[in-house]
Amino acid sequence: MNKYDTMIACNKKTSEEKINRAVTEIRQMLAEEEKVTVPKLVKRTGLSRGFFYKNETVRKEMDRALERQMGM
Image 1 (cartoon, rainbow, N blue to C red):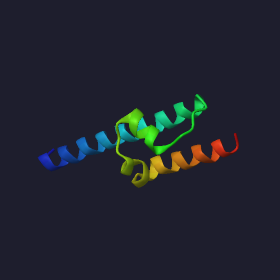
Image 2: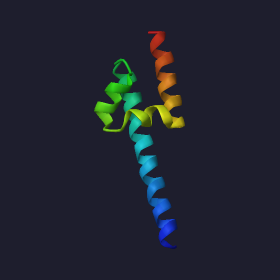
Image 3: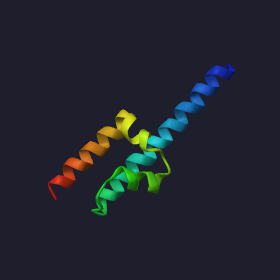
């Protein structure tokens, strides 16, 4: 494996870890019946605001959480 492939693999792993951290935190907030907001998520995860808006997987999870909270 060359340096480029190693770098790509490392970046992918880091990205997956961030996604998992964000999704886990969103689900935990739902379980605790805490309102899910981007500022709270930024504070609890250390990830950037843009990450929550730009990452498709995290954005979908956030939208689902917000829909569920509207029904509460």
